[in-house]
Amino acid sequence: MRTKERDDMLDWIASNSGTLQVAISLFTAVVWLAYLHILWMNFRRQRQAVILINRSIAQDENAHCFVTNMGAEPIYLMEVMAKVVTEDKAYTVKVTEREEVALDKVDNPLTRTNQGPIKSGEFIDIGSFLDLLHRADARIGSEGLFDSVREMELTVAAVDGHAPHIVAARRKFTADWKDGKPYFVPEQVMTDQIRHFFRRRKITSLLEEQIE
Image (cartoon, rainbow, N blue to C red; front, side, top):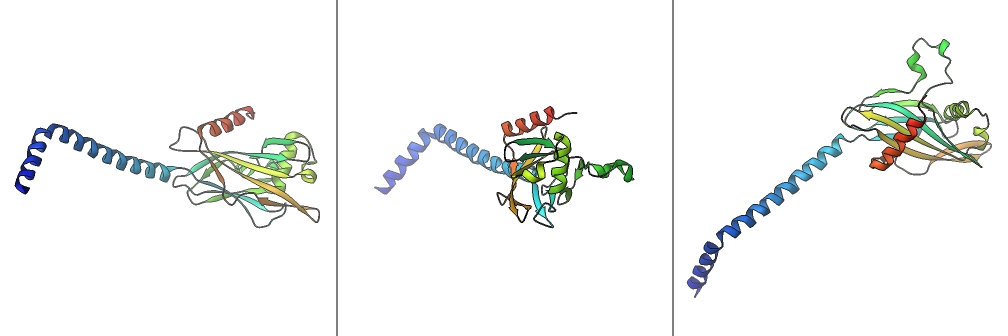
């Protein structure tokens, strides 16, 4: 009985060998495609830029803001945009340039800007929150942002050597007023990495509007 069943199975395999070969080939191809997809995703993840925006040194308006490149490749910081929300209005301006530093008092003009390369694992100090507010004041021609600030959202735009588009990150800080001072508290633990096409495109359009 067992011999007959084995013979029947062998006969079935022999008569359907072509179909079986196609099925095995398709299954092997699917496995390889899945494996290659995993390798490609890991490769992309390793090459993706990771930008951190952190508060350090203090917590009030004298707290400094650090931009750190945690990606595997160096990046070039292009612009820092600040969205300053007051009691009755919101302003979005560039705060990249260190306008609080007088040009005639520095030997190297590059010390007046935050633009420049950031190596992997390194950071730059883009200034204190008070500095950023003063730069925003200078841009919009006012002097009252400090007394009325409620939120500050910082967006960092950069480029790397592999992506044909900008890489960007964003973090929002809430101004918690205590004893006449704003204490800037991040709303989230992590910096928001802007990777979606439409969000990157929106930032690109905003930067193009700010071209001088």
